Length: 72
Image (cartoon, rainbow, N blue to C red):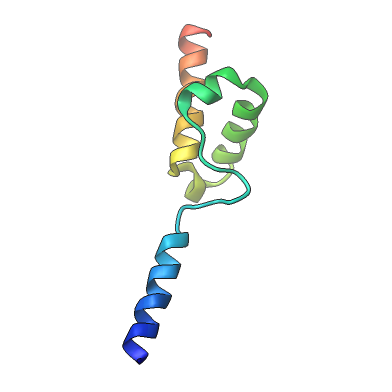
């Protein structure tokens, strides 16, 4: 019984990793089309090194780099 409860707890903890119910990850293309959201996310990502490696930040940062380099 203890082992099943421990496995359930581990599953619940791992399933919650990387998920943010308030703000789901957006794609690079989405960030390219939404300037205000992109700029806010880039600022947020640049202020938090732990968050900077998340897929959402990587998409926002890549979109920002592309916009700066090539325009929209």
